[in-house]
Image 1 (cartoon, chains in turn red, yellow):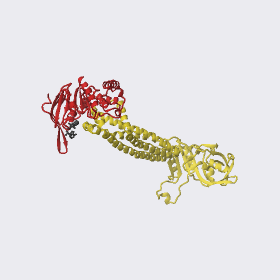
Image 2: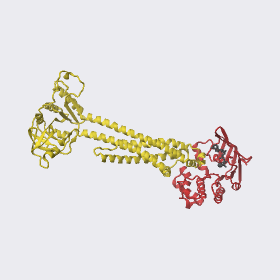
Image 3: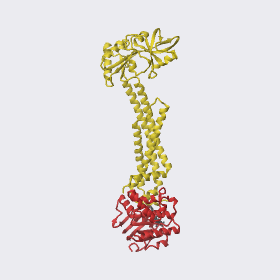
Image 4: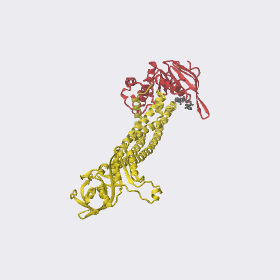
Length: 225
Length: 404
Ligand SMILES: Nc1ncnc2c1ncn2[C@@H]1O[C@H](COP(=O)(O)OP(=O)(O)OP(=O)(O)O)[C@@H](O)[C@H]1O
Ligand SMILES: [Mg+2]
């Protein structure tokens, strides 16, 4: 489902070129559970952002469901992000002035859905994450674990095929982190393709497929396993 | 991927309420701009209406004739021969009635004389005229009648006095029907002017009006001070003016020795000057709207950078650049509109206060000014928030989200 071929991503810092991604070739099938590990600065987040179309490769091809998405225009890319991809961030990134339910509603609102269509879906997404009694709370009134669950509800409310999580437990205590991982795995059990970037080997080991990065490259042979 | 209008507005209002100080600042800037346009134009418009109103109270469709040429050009044949301009006589006046387009005329003579009753006396402006003056000037009688309809040459000893004169000479006593002495002649009071009757130059309350023939005898002159001619309609004014000039030239052996001005010409000049003035102050006030626009731009730029993470997030959730632009512009437009309407209300309040403070000044903001202020406010709000909106749309979501 995901095909990366000879992907490079270079950053120009002053007169120096940083190779954040250096010739990455990677195939991921639908429904896989993939963890990405590696030292700080090895290019994990860059890879994830690229997979989520938040970033463009300097060269190489990215095909999603057989379609070359790097050549799509802004609008089509936004549509793909909205429909196909869910993001979970280390910093949660909830909008503080909106309630949990309103935060979860945002992707549907951007998709232009009618309110009558949005509300049941928001309610269901919150219910699946056991947040129904928190739906009218603002993020500041929620614990870290609850916030990340709201973020997961937001990421999954559009029923995407791919869920990208960049250190989803990085800002959580051990217990909440465990909960969040279990929730993500449950989603994967139900068919979503799950890709988790983590520093925690204990979490990384849980994935069926574990990728290791070093200096912008996947450790030999892992890309097309 | 089209956002619903209601969603956009709800989202924008939410973010406006999230930053109250910024919102209030922009509201105030817009409101001041619009308010000053409204108040200043209402002042200009008030001045225009006041002046034109004063002129109109002199009479409508009026043509004013007075002896002598108005040209200040020093030398012409008459001055060379040392001639004084020919008199403007009652016969001249009567000759003008021949025209179908002349509705009525009123000759005027002015002088001053001692007016006395039972030992009380005072020096008063005496106006010699005819029955028609009342109608031409739109004056109202307080008591009794105005000068009778009679031949202009008839020096009837009757007088109409202003209410102030009445109070000074008679106090609480009855004045109507009493005989007063003006100069060395006796006149019977047949009427007292109403309190409405002010017009530029002459305060009717302080004058005594007698038949023109009586005034001419009293001041020993055969010339008129002014001749008021009222045309049948507004359209007839120019015809009558030409007729007056021709007729009097013919009667004065070909000399153009009278000056004819029309009420409307004077009125239009003032109207034009003060109208232009109103546009000018409105324009100057509109500059403050542009200043408000620049303020809006800066505040929106700050808002965009304050909300970098939020905008990055929206992009990650699938917002297109267009949607981001729409969200930011809507926010700015709601602010501009609220500010403009607040300004409009404040401006109306301001001109209300002006009208209260200066009751003679009909300071109503002209409709065009309010509409223009609103439109300009909305357009500046839109134009000046385009740049911040575009900047937001071009934000790199990765950088936006990684900032902490
Ligand atoms: N916008 C940027 N400009 C310049 N260099 C960048 C930029 N983004 C990333 N880099 C560089 O690219 C390399 C990879 O960064 P990346 O964030 O992908 O690392 P990471 O593996 O996610 O690290 P960490 O575990 O600390 O999150 C780093 O050397 C980083 O400095
Ligand atoms: Mg990272």
